[in-house]
Length: 140
Image 1 (cartoon, rainbow, N blue to C red):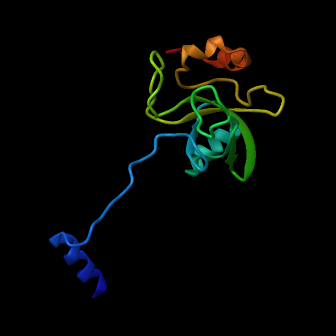
Image 2 (spheres, rainbow, N blue to C red):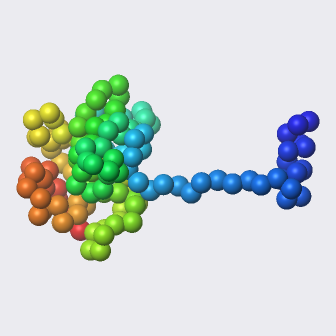
Image 3 (cartoon, rainbow, N blue to C red):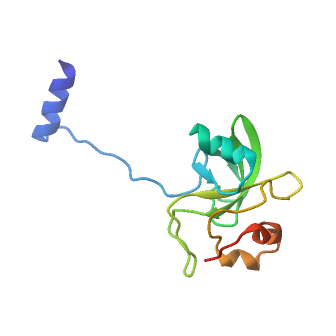
């Protein structure tokens, strides 16, 4: 009965209803898509439980393309680099339709052997991405 009363007050406009807009930022608990062919990434994709960001390794705690993050995937903590985001980007940086990461080991080497999506060519300017860029087959 209370639900119907609440619904009727919403329809008449006496009660305000608000929602917040979707944040297209990489922050804690953001869902990420693993785009390399690592076994852990494939298992997460098949189970329907995507990787979640635990920590962003920068000052603002908001991740963009090229930032290192710590993710929780299949009950494990793994490090990863962000290679594509939904949020609005700087000029000449592509905007992707999903938030993409590439998993790396603790020593900095990639977990997988291939990257299945296009990688921004702006990452070529940064030095620590040479191993990841060698796995990519397409660039944007």
